Image (cartoon, rainbow, N blue to C red):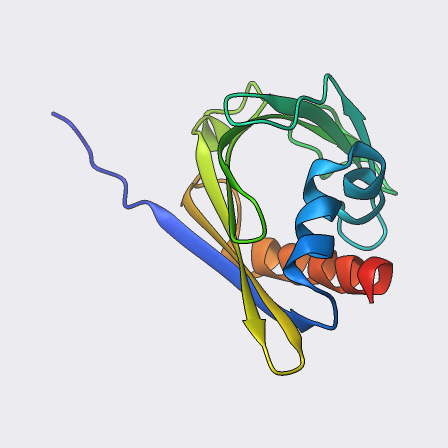
Length: 155
C-alpha cells in the first residue's frame, strides 16, 4: 500500500523600497545572503557558494537555544541548488535539509520573485513540497522575518 502525502506550500511577501537589481544581488552575494537569510534571532554561515544555475551553496542556520535543530540540537544544515537564476526577476532554489529525521527528508522548492511596484519591489517567496516536519506557521513567520532583514539591508 502506498500512502500519498499532500505536499505543503508556504509563502511570504513584502514590498521593499529597493530595486529588483539590488534585491537580486542580496541573493547572489554570499556576505549579503548570510547577513539576512536566517530569521531573527538566528545566524547563518555559508560555504561552497556558487551563484549560477546548477550551482548552489551549503548553509548552517544556528538557533540561539539548543533543541529546535533538524541537523543538530542547535542547528539546521541545508544544501541548496540554484535551479533558476533570472536576474532581477526570479530565483528558484532546491533546498534539502541534512537530517536523520524522515519528516525533513524531502527536497523543497523555494521560488522568489521580484515585481516592481510603485513603492519599490514586491518580493514574494513561495516554498512548495515542504517537508512535513516543517510547520506552516513557523515557516511563514521565518520567511517573513528574513524578508524584514532583507528590507533593513537593502532599503
